[in-house]
Structure formats: C-alpha cells, structure tokens
Length: 264
Image (cartoon, helix red, strand yellow):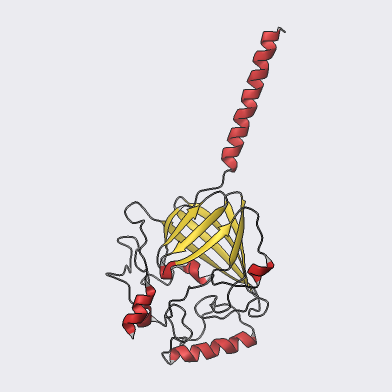
C-alpha cells in the first residue's frame, strides 16, 4: 500500500474516531433544566398561586392574599394524613403543640406568615412559580414564594465544617449527574422549618433528590427525607412541575414584608 493510501486510511480512522467521540459526548451531555416552572396541583386543584398557567383550574384571580390573611394553611384539626412523615414520640409531641397553636388561629409556627423562607423540602412544593438557572458547575432554584433561593453545586465541592455549623433554611446542596438524572444531597438545614405541612424536624435532617424530565417540559423531583431524631423512617414525596411557555415565564417580586406592614 502506498504512503498516500496509508495517509488517507489514517485520516479516515482519525475522522471516524473523532465523530464517535463527539457523538458520545453529546449523548452524555446532561439535560438543560433552565426555565420557569409551575407545580402540578401542589395542594390540590384549587390551590394554584400567582403565575399559574392561563386556564389552569383553580387559578387565582388578581394579586395573591397576604400571608397573614391565609395563614395558617391548615390548622391540624383533621389530624395527620396517612402519608404524613412518621414522627418519633418526641417530635409528635412537638407537632401537637404546633397543632393546638394553629387551631387557636395563631401564626406563631407559620414561617410563611412571618415572611421567612419556606425551607426545604417545602420550597420544592412551591405553590407559586420557580425559575431554574443552570450552568456547568451550578444550578440555582429561585421560588417566587417569598423570593426563596437555593443553589446546587456540581463542581465536586463539599460542605466545610463552618457551613455545617451555620445551617440555613435552604441548606447546602451538592449534586452530580447519573445519566439524565440530577442527584442532589442537602445538609446543614435550619431546624426552624418543617418537612411537610408543619411536621417538625431536627438539625440532623438531610435530603436526597432525584430530578429528571419524565417527558418534554415535565420535571419530576423525587425527594427522600432522613432524620434519625425526628423520623421513625425516611419519608418520601414526589413533586412534578410543568415548564412555562413564552409569555408566562416571568416571575414577580413577592414583597412579603409589605403584607405584614399592611396587616398591622
């Protein structure tokens, strides 16, 4: 075989290898979650908040009620639902104290009424809209409800002891991709928040999420909550969100403190 033929063959093999590598890289690229999303019936068909897709059942007309006007969302008078987090006796006693307070009409244990962040995993329940901003090393979730914010770091960093000693409502989240699924671990969570509804948790609570598209524009978040102090077993829930279309993809400032000032 001539030198020219050998060169042609070599370049052909190199081109084939490059094409295969490019195809493999594209196939392995993670999905892009960027966009604005709205929950699919987070609290039932009649509980969609401001910014719900046009024509959606239960869409609220006009501005949302001030937190002090609709808090508490549920007073616990109907007891606990069968799928509520299974609390240890110590934390069930705390839940009873909170329940009696809410039944009396107090917002003492209602963070939303105080304009505090909803915390995790409540933030991912998001009765209002949520924007996802994605880069190679970080994904940011911004919830319209009380302008809550959380970040998921994808660059391999780990929480330092300083971070672990300074818990926040959103906690500290790190993630990695498993195929088309974003796997997120969250630690350093402020115990002054609730798991679901007003089920209390301890400073030992951690979260694991598996977030993926289940169909075009339909995002699913499978959440597992573990807490050796507050829960008798891990608690799981699944949240689903629909991506907004153009014209319905702008979130509004919540300005919760204004509602508190007007309510005085």
